[in-house]
Image (tube, rainbow, N blue to C red; front, side, top):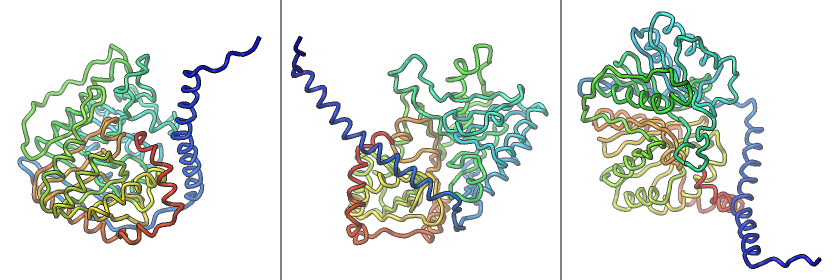
Length: 420
């Protein structure tokens, strides 16, 4: 019996499969190969020393905000807050290494629980797959929520359930809160340049509420129906100059992107932004270009070489548009800059966990603090200048003269933008 010749529909399906394989398959293979080669080259190498700014505190309303640019300074104050806790500790992190630094935090949290403090911990299961299972065992008195590697359950097509928990929050006794880009681990303590803030006063309460809402949204499936919800005793008081912006994919809430765009569109003097991974959508790029073209001093600081080489190459695909519009691009050298910060017009600032990419702005659980205060904006500008002193500015001439193979790699990896 002669085989039936392929129909028009069969030929169309075959063509679509081959097209998709070419568009996405080839870039994925190249991306994996680049990551493996880069990982091999990094073995045994350590970042060089880089300039930092000591912790600085500014008064805002009935509280204060302290900025940190060096992990060792931050960790000491975080551990001091945990060790001084009397009633409650809320601790949430994306990565929690099982190394010496990770053990210090674990022991401090367990000790607090042993003395009667209510200790709640959240960490992301996927981000900590390589961490020893032994480290992730906690005594019963510590309430732990491990956000699952696969959170969708039987709802396979519900994209709201695929976001990671990328937040980094610590709140102690409803009086002091920490938020920013720092994960927990030895390397982050001394080898990475990141930014975190410590908040006191009414601004802490919204940070506390962000933690509680996440816990209550996920507790039943992960811990069991017998686990009681996390109820807050503090009332909500509006702090007009400090707002906690949080992305909640389960509720389809993504205010952080809108926060950035509003600030950029209102800018009249300067927009100085530091980002670990810069893979924006076109609307975001257009906002930066429009600001630069109307005379705003727009500066972007990114790593010269980050810990994700593919993200670096995809990010470079936006440089031509930005440079042509007058945006100045600086590349931080000798160490990984992991900060997610921006300051606008000497008045507006944000520090948080969200990168400028699809995963952070429309996929993951994130939290950023938004502050309208001239003193804090001045501090962020001073931090920027210190970082700029350790950076290389990318000129238009240098960018246009790059090798042909670099242009080709940027073009080939472009289809992966929506995935990152």
